[in-house]
Structure formats: C-alpha cells, structure tokens
Image (cartoon, rainbow, N blue to C red; front, top):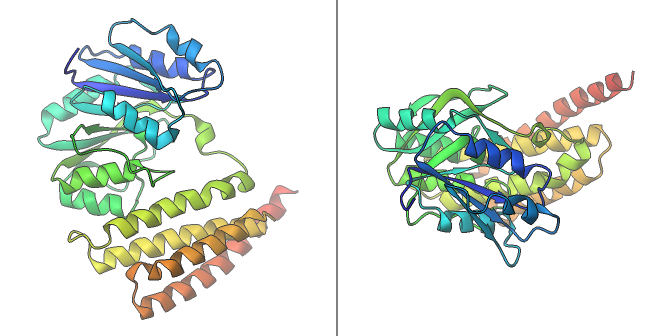
Length: 315
C-alpha cells in the first residue's frame, strides 16, 4: 500500500503488557484503505518479541530503532515512515474503536480542506468548540491551549514540512496543530466517541503530578514564546493565555502545599524563573501587576479549598 488513506502510527517503548491491545484495535478497523506503522524505540523489556508477531501481516510494517530516540524523536520517525494522506497516532496504552476510520472518512468526505479531525474518548467530555472550525479560529484556539486533542483522539493531514518540535516534551501535538491551522487548513471536532484512553493518564497522587507539572507548563510557555509575534495572535489573546496557564501553575502549587508535597515549591520557583527570563512574554507592566495580584488571591482561595479537602479525606 504505497499511498493509503490513513497511516495509524503506533510508537512503542517498554509496553509489552499493553501494546498488543492497541495494535489489535488498529487491525480491527471496519475500513480497508489504511496501514499500521509500529516503531519500537529500543525497548529494554520484551516489547520487541510482542510486536514481532505482527511482522508480515497485511497493512502492517514493523520497525526497531537501534538507539532510543525519545518520545518526540520516535514520533518523528513514525512520521517519516508513514505513507498515508492522513496521520493517526495511537499510544501504545490506548485503543481505537472499530469504527474510527469509517467515521473519519465520512467526516473528511463531507467537509473540504480539513487538516485536523478530532474525536472524543470514553470520558465523553466535549471541547469548548465543536464541529467545523475555520483555520484562523483554530489557530487561536490551539494557541490558547484550550482542551487540545490528544494524539490518540486526533487525525491530521500529512505535509512534507511537518515534524514534531523536539523542544516540546509533554505536548508536541500542539505545535503540529498550530502549523496545520496556520497553513490554512480547517479542523473538525466530532462528538463521536472513537477511542479509549488509559485512565491512569488522569490519575495519580499530588506528588507524582507535581513532578511532571513543570514539563507540561514549560511546554505551554514555549508555545507562547514561539508564536506570540504571529500576526494571527493579538495582545489580548496572548495576555489571556499567559494568565490562564499561570493560574493552572498556581492551582497545582496551592493543592500541593495543602497536601504537604515538597516538590511543588520547585514548581513555583521554576515558573517564576521562566517568567522573568522571558520578560513575562511581552505583558505590559500593568498586566504584570494584575497577574501578580490575581495569582496571590487565587493561591489563597485554592489553598483553603484544597486544605479542606485534605481534612475531609482523613475523616
């Protein structure tokens, strides 16, 4: 299949207990014109043995990296190997519903110039904007980082210029969607539930969540720095985005302090250092003062709420 309609890319790493379910869900599609590209990122467990059984199957191509490329590097390797007009990434611990590609094909057939198509996962939580979204609106939507579709939930058009930014460690898909929207492609957010994500992605202790928080938030601020001077972004959107992400940082910080998690102190220090080094991402002096006041009041309110929740949890 030299030019399939869709390439389902499955990057795997140390996932021998999970990846078989993900691959089987891709194989069970009620659709014909697609391929599956599996790339093992030099796993150290028996993942290679698990995916080896899929070698030679129709539609399936399996590759093994000689050295570990990391998450973003392996995603780019998948992109380089994919031959489809559209790209779907399925995480090795997620699964696709068997109608995923049928529904995708219908949406693309009914709408012109689509660059990103997103479905819902089993939580059924709708995004703030649903249906057809024009390219300029989608660019601003993604820049503001409002409920960005996760890779397993989304499909996007393959373009020669596209690759994942290796500076992004937590959410490199944000940059891909921005690039596609900036090139003039529209998006479609469907209300169809077409994938099941591993629920452990949303679970975990306050401590464990605090440890990866800075990676997530630094990715968001990196996106702001990368695109803040774009003509499609006005100052108010920039300001609101910086404010929103800053509040999320302090929400995590307040909750961590209330639950006695020492790691959140580093989150606060790193956040403030990042803001200072980047000159508050272009905020005016007045808006810097407003942000300072907002965060202090927000911290106090969130701390009291979280402390109350901690006390109740002990009863």
